[in-house]
Image (cartoon, rainbow, N blue to C red; front, side, top):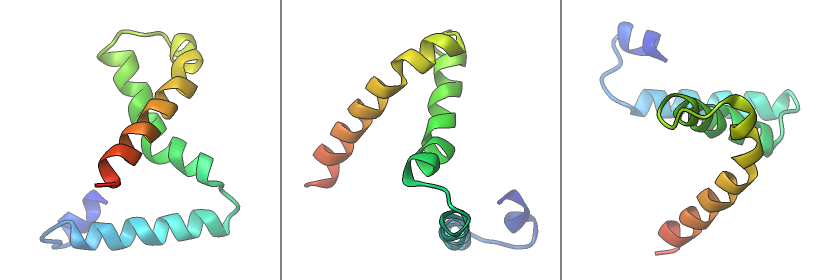
Length: 81
């Protein structure tokens, strides 16, 4: 994605198109929605937990289902407006 800016991208519009294309390609390769959630959000959540919260990977993995549940609740609350 950084390469898009190096080649002259001026905003996030180009990146949004690339992300959609990547998602379609991953689905075509057999990735599930759960896999994509881990790729797009789970890794960020894991790094945040390890770096900011100081949690070891084992603790994060135990808490991950609850974090996803809370995330879904927030999405439903904010996107339903």
